[in-house]
Length: 179
Image 1 (cartoon, rainbow, N blue to C red):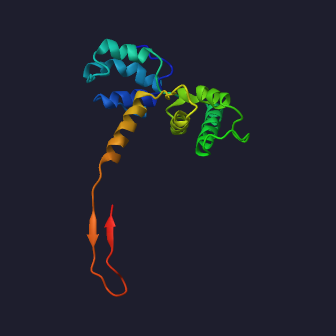
Image 2: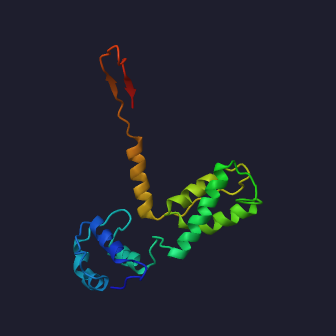
Image 3: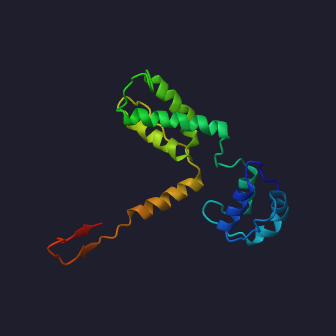
């Protein structure tokens, strides 16, 4: 079976675990790819991967997961922090961050494709809040990160109201907590 080189061992193991197949993590990537044929008949398909042909096509194509090198990541993080600082300082062109509107636009266009990094998503959010922003820039996020963000969003929406009342003493008045 042909697997694109951008798929890591962890990606392959996680894909198969999500679809009901347990693969031994102690095996090397080469050993896992050679044994994948025996796992294909037990693979449980879903709405993203509907059949065997789509699974093979998915494994043949480049992965959507983004992995910058350490040098790229340093540069991306620096540009994202710079845009966030510019946004937190009310989008002022003071020379310490940016001198004109083209500079933040060029920076955001260089980093928006790395949307798996949280600082890039935050930088895009700050850039889009600017009044002078004519183009709305959305970060490119892989499906795995989108699913994690949706799960976290659901968890954050669940609130449990709580009221605690204790008897008062002269030293301690009544304490009411609203969480």
